[in-house]
Length: 258
Image 1: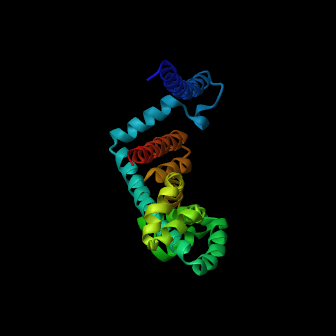
Image 2: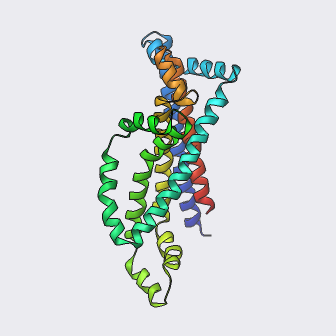
């Protein structure tokens, strides 16, 4: 490796480290200012809470053996809805890709359903399915499924037509074309869709837990708001942030491994 190449690689690594350092520095600065303003009574900690109060609240939940139970329930619901969304959306997108008639029939309905506020369907879901975990998962599916189908389908139909024609000249089947051309050409789109699915499912789960839940992070946030315990509300939001970051890192790790 030449000196120019080494210098180029070093500059890339240095830039990544600087970006990471700046991100961490900004986060620490925000937390420090938040705590400082709270301690000096410049902001009302009853309304805004503070980093130390959030840590104390999370520690209290842990001591009461409630913390991991709530996290496990929300994670379980999120993972189930994420897997279902990914599988169902992929199957429907492939069907729409290979059947233009079905695609034209379904597409207007997808657009209309996507614009519909899903929270408005919450009471109907509870009546039809019941006030249970299934209703929460269905709510997450309603929020994430349509966006996922549209993203995957738009990516599939944008695949290079010349590559598809080339395989067809060699009598390749639709399955061969899907595996060897369409999916490899849409790797980045699939990964970005997975990330969107993850965030949308988490949003849907929390909304579902707001409507009907006796446990979970959404339940903690809702209960905290009802009793004006802003420390509990902010703790729930903080835990959700950590969960979303960890899930995002898992998706990135899978992407790098593949």
